[in-house]
Length: 257
Length: 205
Image (cartoon, rainbow over all chains, first blue to last red; front, side, top):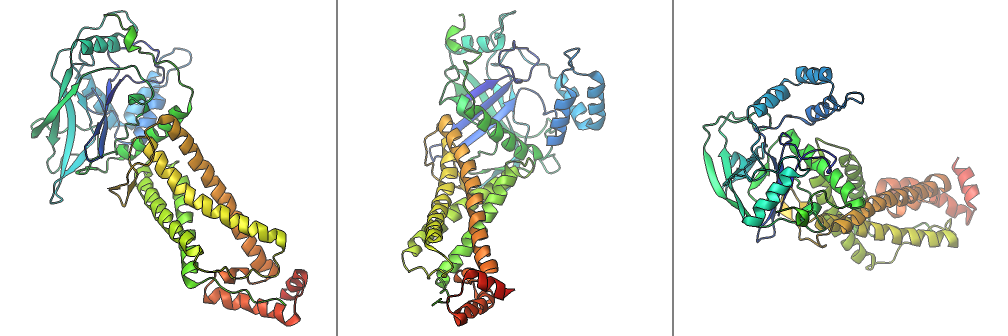
């Protein structure tokens, strides 16, 4: 089961092509274990610490008068967090693709894959698309989601699960730093999405895509974002399971052909 | 005539203090971890492990509770207080038994597994249901507050008896060191034979 997402606290906002696209996935294995991962379509993550993330949110808070972030606050942030400035510059070099279906979703954070002998290998993963995306209809509110729904009605969508194997010296606790492009990659499988549903009780709406729900053989690294994500996702899950439910912004049945 | 209070069997006293340490740790870590960012993941793992150990210990304690009679309460305990003692003991057992189960069920209702000792997955004991998760999550917090309140009352009552009434209440659950000092005040009560608690208090000072 999975969940496509766009960022922000207001689900009714119009889709924008530049907003980071998210894909959360929850795999259930026959032995009862699970693997949950939440990824983005950018090259790297903009922050390497919870403090950096917090500071960036404050700096990008829209000004009450202009409705836009204060440029002075953002440049002060970039001075204080050069790692974020570099990461955001790198992400700008990788413009987003047409839609959800042709986006590469990366995990950024390093995990250790552990073999039977207990040897730990640093790994990062990404889901690489195997199809082009249908063009979004310009001027519609849910242009990206609607295009995804139309495409999934025609047939399944597929992504290759690509594992990148780290080498000694590669950063394992800093999601703003990419690994060198010549690292060995392993094709570990194909993700096939066969259907799409409106959020409802019991589907992806009710899953906490906690990055530390891992099967045997995958272990978390010391990346400080991991614990922070678990903590914040848990608080968010508690808040949203307790609040009154409103109709989802995207209604799959109402998407025009 | 006032009898010196007897003691619980050694195994019961060990189980009692083991439970006390475990519950204090689990409550403390629980309240800290929900406010923490960097240590959240590791604290949750310790918290879940403590919870399962507490559940195992309390099951052993309940079974053990039926294997012996309870040492007589000091005569300073009247019939009303006696009812309170029985009621608070039952409440504590119920809360300590419920809390790990609620926590385990809560994790299960979120669709994932409780994990102990770092990597051992426990089976799920509740269906995947977000509404149920929220009810259990709130219950887990309420039971935690109830535990803090009942434990505070429990400790206060024992301290009141031991330090103010000097009736040796703590020695029923105590080991040698505590027993000797409180045993002295009990003997004092015995010599005068059925003095009122106020007298004991005055004499103690």
